[in-house]
Length: 220
Figure 1 (cartoon, helix red, strand yellow):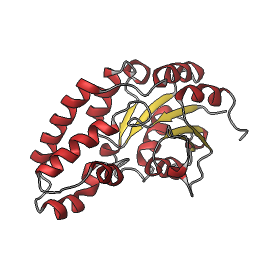
Figure 2 (cartoon, helix red, strand yellow):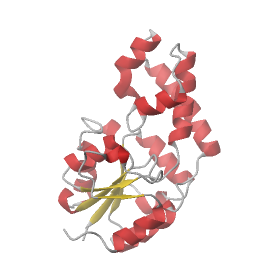
Figure 3 (cartoon, one colour):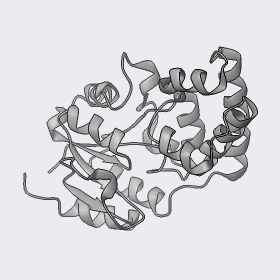
Figure 4 (cartoon, rainbow, N blue to C red):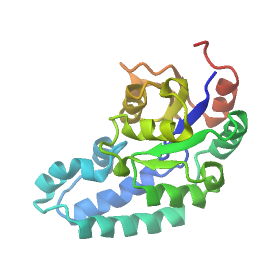
């Protein structure tokens, strides 16, 4: 029923959020913001760090410089390469859906593109996506704006209304819905509270469910 599938990356394809946010908490603490891990996850999950520039500068009393960002990226990437794993069942789900839609899949992330490419390569998923990787950093607006999903759909030559978006955050789900796509929510905790109030069509808890859900999608 769908002509293309657009995946978020962090938290959907790779289990990177605890690693990235752990490093971010460390560098924010070192810069003077005594933020806890839980608070860091709450503030930054689903967002680009630069989107919270004003908050970071207010809490640290320092400008968010390019040098600071590069130091964060380097420490983050080192930790990711040492610890990153694919979300359980994600490789198999991506491979099956890639076959099902004749390769019309893309990754549309709010993270910087080099990070997304590095992560997909590290867990063996990059061959399924090739150059079909899009970053909110390269768009006029990042999630929850729809720009990155619109760019991915346009590259594939598919009407966004015929696209399925797989997301794990409310911010990302808002972006997919704003693009006019159908959104399914991945919620490994087994509840859909993250998507309350949003027109997310399905919520699933395990990636192995995705293959079955995709094989029998809702009538549209």
